[in-house]
Amino acid sequence: MRFENALMEDFVILKTSGVPTYNFACVVDDHAMEISHVIRGDDHLSNTPRQILVYQALGWAPPAFGHLAMILGADGSRLSKRHGATSAMEYKEAGYLPEALLNYLALLGWGTEDSQQLFTQAEMIAKFSLERCGKSPATFDPNKLMWMNGEYVRQMPVDKLAALAKPFFAAPGLDEIKPEALRQAIALEHEKMKLLADAPRLTDFLLWDEFDYRSDAVDKVLRAPGAADILAELARRLGALAPFDAASIETLCKTLAKERGVKNGAVFHPLRVAVSGRTEGPSLFHMVEYLGRPRALERIQKAQTLLTVRP
Image 1 (cartoon, rainbow, N blue to C red):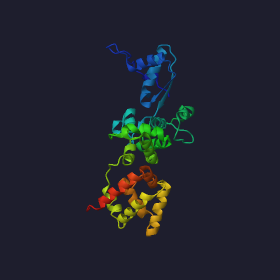
Image 2: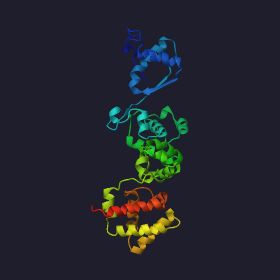
Image 3: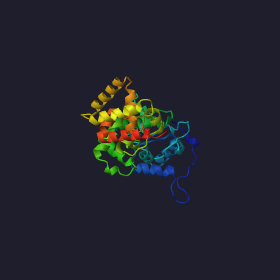
Image 4: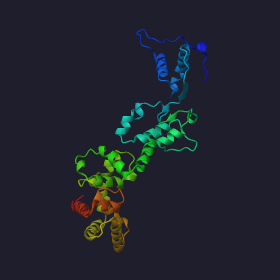
């Protein structure tokens, strides 16, 4: 870019208070730090010719300057606090991973020829080039950041994920949960997690037996015709099942459905609601195996008690 020198005013470099102005101070600062490249937002473009003049007046070689297009919010306006979190710490507290946030920020205004989306830090360093930075403003998309964080969460080893998710559990008594029990609970819901903060919501009913049965699940599933009889038979058969593992539990449920001439869901759904209080969740049979026979039977009994209460 070129600027007409004759249009440059005789700008101030020192205030009457004795404090240097930005355009003077940043030149001295960058020179002292031996900065070779200045890469910043294009809102600083108007400052650049003034700073180059200061470099020349002081007899110093100016660095290379590059200006990137500003980041915009989804509404097309300059990114600001009204568009969401304003600091990296806020994203940390919301359950985002630093690797995902760095990856996403790198793609705002830059990209590879093959449009690669997920990078290790080493890949970012190896593939980054200023020539691939775009001239058009980038849009900060919270949904894409959420997606990207979910990808990083699902790629993370369960042990590490459990350790990082632990601080997000506000419920008292977590220290009484065995580390292996927490790890297994996280593993069951690993594929559904997008944020570290999702862990308590997805696993609380696995870790603690005190949970609420969702009213819609009770009304639509447990009170469905034949569901009470199926629960009673499930309790009887699960009480004698050996070995008590996911494969055996699945076979038992499918056998019961076949004997009763109903679809598998007529057995699967009441069992899920009985042991979890909800209609969605992790793999049903692995979930029951995780709970173990005593806890699973206690929950079925609790569900049966609910059915004796008039809706």
